[in-house]
Length: 170
Image 1 (tube, rainbow, N blue to C red):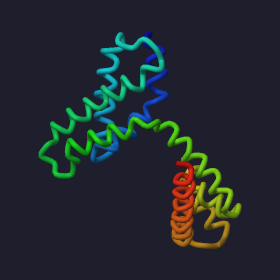
Image 2: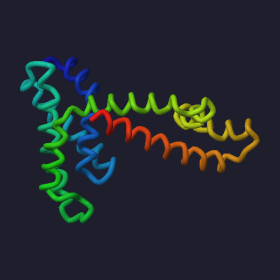
Image 3: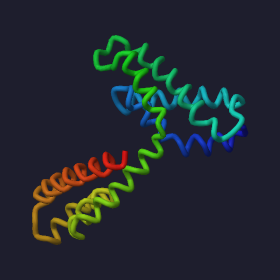
């Protein structure tokens, strides 16, 4: 496989790989370290890849070994999961995570439709700009703190709705 195609596939699946690593590692800093090491191993072994559809299983295998290597280096940390549980997670993660992400995104879109336009705007505000909630609060004559509390309640309702939607789909 050529290097350009590898980079395209790696960038396309990097979030998926990070999600798999996050299930077995204590924090995102560890995930970043392991993804970086795994990407270097993948780069060195790029000649093993023949076709695009081999990328994910191949990358998961390399990632799994890098996760185990990282965990061995941190074996004194009590916050790490034991190796049997990590292996179980690796087996369960063989389900298509891209499909799961697609289901979640569809559920979020469907659930958002159940909220009023004002509530939709408030729910989406933090993802548009840093000061969007504060700006909405000022326009409505309310405190930002009160809107953040409302936002928390709305997020909880959205979370419950998404869980029901995804649970119904599986």
